[in-house]
Length: 492
Image (tube, rainbow, N blue to C red):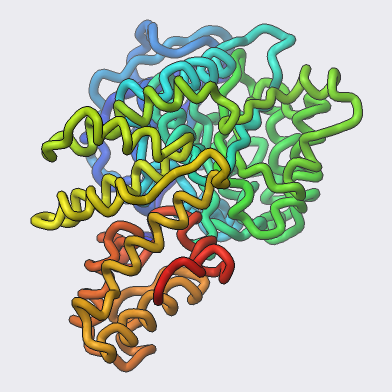
């Protein structure tokens, strides 16, 4: 994680004013590798002590005041800036947030932002109805619209892909206030202590009035980011947000709750706050697997009252014909360079069931095989799907096929196979991604041998170009590898 120290932090805002700028090129030295600016609602700042000319802004809704945090910006200009004052005295106040407030007190993690890391979006033309329904909820400002939206789905049904796509759609409309993508592979992204501080940081960049209120909290309780979620939610979310001024409802996205350790400690305070409308004007879009310790927080006895404040959507219950059509589009796009008959393509679609991860893994498997693509296709089609098979069984068989081929004694010596298995197992059990260099040192193997193993397993593993660490494409592969019962079909 980059740790550039910002030297000046400037906030230009007008009470109840709207701010928009499209100047991603105009401010080259923003603080500590910030995520890409929010489309349509971009923070604006100026190093001079005067306001920019006020012009009408058709993009933003009334009431939004934005805050910008600038690092070593000097002698820059802001072009195409639009500011629309909707009431109150205009004023310019600088340094609402000092450098130490943000960096040392909030202790957020950038790794959980939606635009950091390798996260896929929905293939164009797929999941259209689901995405539109969520967007309708996000844009609905009527009083009886639920403040929370929980999308639940079994492993591999595409929850994170939908969450990422929603972030981009919300961002484009200026409705994304923040995001936290949980990940069991990344230490900071599975730490429940980081969830609220990271959301707080993004909200402070989104709303000037919220930033001011949060700064006061940090001045009084500078260690709040290190305390338990009940204190964080009460002080950083409930109290600070009530002091913020906004006439519409931005959305915070939290993906893969099940991949965050001890997430129940957050949910047992977060969900009641949503249900009791203690964070008015802020919407939460949450995703998770249907794990009992998470469902317990959403399923209450007074279900009718619950539906009024929390909307439920079970992704694995989507009509199979709709999922089938989406997976068909996905295959056509992903395998467009291969010559596959309609009959075989239909077989691939049918074998995928409702699991997008199965389809995605097949695409990686086939397109990564180069000259062996057709033989791999034959192997995949030979994996028989029967009605009595559990949803994950066909995925397990695909994982077994990939491992058996990549690490087979027909292509490796017994010594090479043993080395490759060590690389595979170590990359899974380390608890967080490590580089090929570290793997080679841990296992006392040549770096080239480690890299060769990862390349052979590129259908399920990949090397992240930003940190050179080895990641799994999907959590279901870790589930498979760590379950003796599920991995038993592998010959290894």
